[in-house]
Image 1 (spheres, one colour):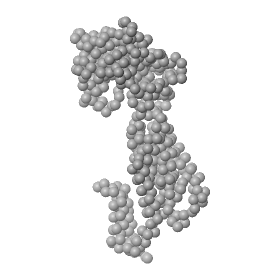
Image 2 (cartoon, one colour):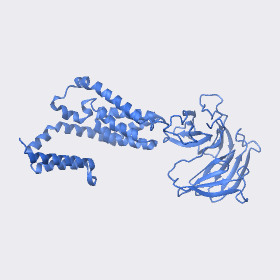
Image 3 (tube, rainbow, N blue to C red):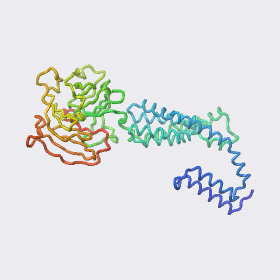
Image 4 (cartoon, rainbow, N blue to C red):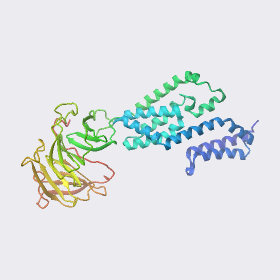
Length: 441
């Protein structure tokens, strides 16, 4: 049928307008409404005769049925949590490596695209991946780009990998053996080249460690940081760029992370005493002393002599709101009534405690009104920072921190001074305690 020039212009105008509205989604109206609306308008204006439109629908029936079946499968998988499970498995096997997580998500996207179509990857897998990377607290961009690009790169592995394949080949779809002979090698090349390009472009974002699965983080002395993961592993890190703040985008700013302990997930609280000393409070209130003798280099699990023998050095430590170290054996606690109490573990380097006379000084009440602080920490030398409920960062200095001078003693305290705002969104804040000079480099 010969279409007049004006009719052709109108058909193109309505079609392009429908596509534009699908992309822009005015008033947040779904894409399907604009597509169907454009088609209905073409029929109602008789720009396309109804029989011709019905024939076009009939010609694409196998594609519609295929899409319907694949979307039903994908939706059933989503409802049963298959995609969430797959993404979680990938995150688990990635450990603390963002680069490994990227590889695993890319492989998952390849399989989903090849076996369930690129629509399943784009529409169903991507939200599951986004949820996982948010929980892991990593930059989501590399992982979302992986989902977006693999949905195209792997779309010719099998005929079902992209519904457009059915439209393009129509009645001339080759058998699977011939299809693989034609498209398997180009598809493999496309998948690999896409991966290499994305991996190179995202190289800065994929450096470092995943900290989202970490349950607790605390300093170890100098530029050493310890972290306890969900399975109780104690991990050791060295931030070589701590003086300048360099990190993810500088390859030499972090030392190689090491596992230095196990079974650290059963404590009520864990905090550092500096110089490799770690205190842990058990549920029954026992204060345990540990010292990582190899804290400068990160040896641990497999190195004899890397740890001193742990000891019980105190009792009744489970009922405090906050416990933190001030360095040099000084430990502050905030009681439930807001009293700031001072202790000094004079034997903090050797671990004597309960049975050794003179191993402890205190407790002494050195402050009042500390009950409403959200987080509190010290970099040593008597300086204490407190994050208030409104996000204000407050500075204090306990001038008499080595002797435990009371708040009633003249000149025992300096401050408070408000030194920052907007600290409410931070989950865990700590300061690096002083350490041996050969650690800080």
